[in-house]
Image (cartoon, rainbow, N blue to C red; front, side):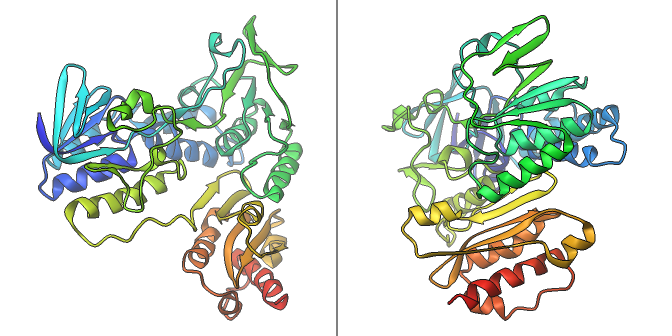
Length: 426
């Protein structure tokens, strides 16, 4: 099959690119080995947030949640998404696609050739650590966790990153005995230390056991129980990050290193002549919003429209625990590693926090008179993140932020005294 563009992977970013290019009149082949729509609507963002919302109810109902997830995912049937793509004029090719030459992708015994080029939108898969015995056990990844219809009595969560802590709190609130095992010295180790300390305190109050600095060397499964690090439980969720399999994609045919963690893409998402890449494959953050950000650039690039080059100084991140951890840009440690003249300030949630009896904090990281990073931990942390992301993205001077009117007693007003502390310090 000869087409204008081959999109390798139809997750959120790939589906966006393929659909928009097809609507623009290009002949597009979208290659997908799993479900059209990708990880986010079936096993990631959408169902996990449904679980979080359900777990926050006064009397959480597990069976009602199971039904809601099946409704939201169409019981893991992608007909609606597939029809959406083909309805725009796209050609859906089912199967694993591998790059086998310049502007060429092979799917089974079918060879696709692209007149304009290939878009690598392969997404990622759970990274399972090479722990002795683990591969021989019926462990869960996020897929089996989201699909579970029976609530386990006990659960070990291996990994205290965003996915791990979100799902740990969900299952705990439904009555499962939960233990989080994390190799780093704190939870959500890529975020500010204050975020990990806050979650550890909250988890302790909710009865979730947290083991940090825990190096797991073996995992066993016998008598219906998993055992690792001296802990036993009915189920084990492995939430130790994600990986991109560049070897399976065949990027060696493009002269790229198949053992790398990501493909090298420039500010216009170009990998090489006739090849673009987006989302997880680029290694700038495994977020749906990153994939769709890249997708917009690629669509404009291919259609010859004006393109603003990709920028990564204000990447927003949200961990949807209770309290939510919303962050953007650099952490204090990252800013110092870059040799910036760093100044920080930390504050509480102010009047609204006292009214709501909510725990949390605001931390701002500044350099050269502007914010380079920020974290808001508390109720609606992901929403308050919006104003902080804008401030970091637009490099709004601290003096100008100090002049802004902050609504009282909204949560975002807690940012104001922290800004004032930074401006007062110079």
